[in-house]
Image 1 (cartoon, rainbow, N blue to C red):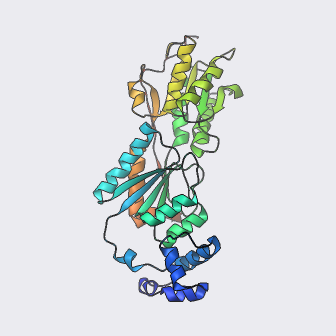
Image 2 (image 1 turned 90 degrees about the vertical axis):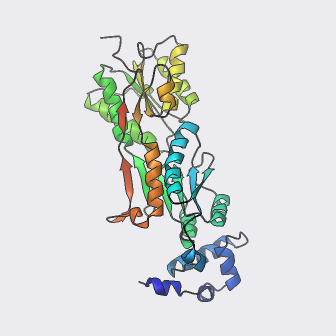
Image 3 (image 1 turned 60 degrees about the vertical axis):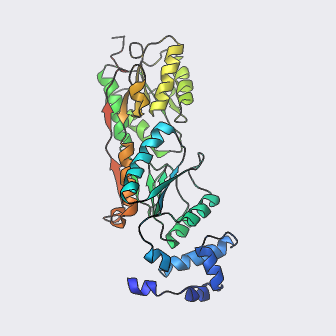
Length: 342
């Protein structure tokens, strides 16, 4: 293994010779110019990483710069909590925060990576988003670390992550409804390509199975984490001949949609229908009746991700990169009550 001193002695001319290109081409790659073929860029960046090349400007750069915060989808109440957590740490370190939205895509395009390389952030926090392997190689060649928050799927083996106990949250929400006496409990969850959607639903299924109850497939709906989908899914569920007496929604916005659907059918919450949400965003406290929900520590997730990003030692754990899972807990308010029937 090279020592830190030997890593710093690696010269651009050596890498250029090995790659079979000019020093000017190496410089273009380092400076994020787009007029290099993908194959040449990948070969050069692989050599830069393998040889441990560190630019002098990177070695001597004083503290400062920014944190790049990337959202799969920006939703004001939910996103602002994570932003506040990242901003808290950034402010402590004298950093700014740049917020980007990937427009619903879980992976990020080449235009985004080019912009990041030009901005040269201290690091990147990816919320329900991911960078491709070739993009991670480009970031690594520049010494730009990344951390994933609430990963859409299993995070890459070499990328640290921060999440919350989604399965336990789904279990707690459903057990609360069971303890109140509900037996016909529906579940609305998020997109079928997101890990948290399945984890929350698996918690619900586990609670129902433990209580010896079957789950009617018609009681379960996958969709978006938006009010409109919660409303549409609840309309279908509440129109069933033997409708559920309670709904566990995959997030608070879906739960607000359930409220709307219940009102349309002349049902009262919680007298005729109990509703539990997930996240504990501010509107959950303001809506009437106040929403029983699972508190997900969104702000703390942002804090932990930013700290992990800026502290190399925090990004590693025994046997590999760090995987942090924060606890969730149920917040009981006024949207749940025993069912009318016995």
